[in-house]
Amino acid sequence: MPDGLKSLAGKFIVFDGLDGCGKTTQMDRIEKKLSDINVPAVRVREPGSTPVGEHIRDLLLTSRGEGLHIRAEMLLYMASRAQLVYEEIKPALCKGITVLADRYTSSTLAYQGTAGGIPEQSILDVARAATENLWPDLTIILDVPLEVALKRIQPTRKGSTFQPGLFQDRIENRVAEFHQKVREGFLRQAQNFPDRYRVISAKGSRDDIEQAIEKTLIEFFAPDRNAPNS
Ligand code: TYD
Image (tube, rainbow, N blue to C red; front, top):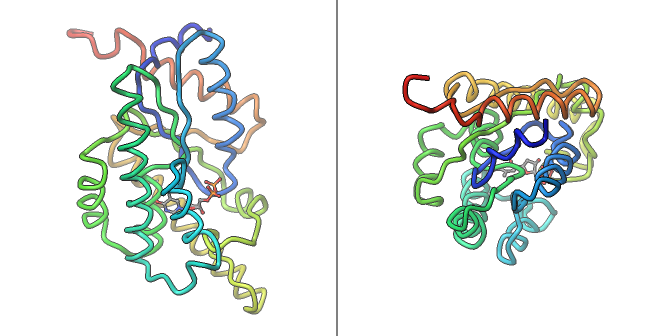
């Protein structure tokens, strides 16, 4: 079965979803499987993964970025992405190395777009400029019900919309409402771009989710899938 994953060679694959959806565990597993079958792969995460990107991450996800306007926030995520595409993603793809990315433009569309209120078209325009129009071959959305995701979120980060000092119920409502919109944002993207997105339920056991991801990847990148007359 893992040999079927050989067709992932040289592809650009994004894993995305709500905070707490289990991306990291699943990406560890895929990375290991690719390594076992000698398919070279690099792993990146957003925001960050480059020296400049890590500074931007620090601004975005700590109290240093207190007071950032949502449009400034969106542009900083894109700036980190622009640097990542230039330094890591494009060079890897040019060498035929698979790129496994933890979040990409799909996150900006869901968090700053659907949940944050920035129009989708504005984000897509900025993304085009930031990435020189580089889109993933496939974006996998790991979809979890809100209750599951919220239980797993550590309420300590700016990126998780937690604001110390507010009355607890208000925080919980705000966080829930925000993440509900983020979830809807991811699902809407998948509906709008069925040829580039797959949604996988991430509420089962780790092993079940792993199997579902592997099956999806193998089917999506099956060598005969894009062949003429197939
Ligand atoms: P991170 O610590 O990487 O958590 P996770 O494991 O959930 O990815 O935090 C990244 C946070 O940044 C997460 O809350 C989502 C948010 N984010 C955006 O709001 N917009 C973006 O474009 C990206 C890439 C991330």
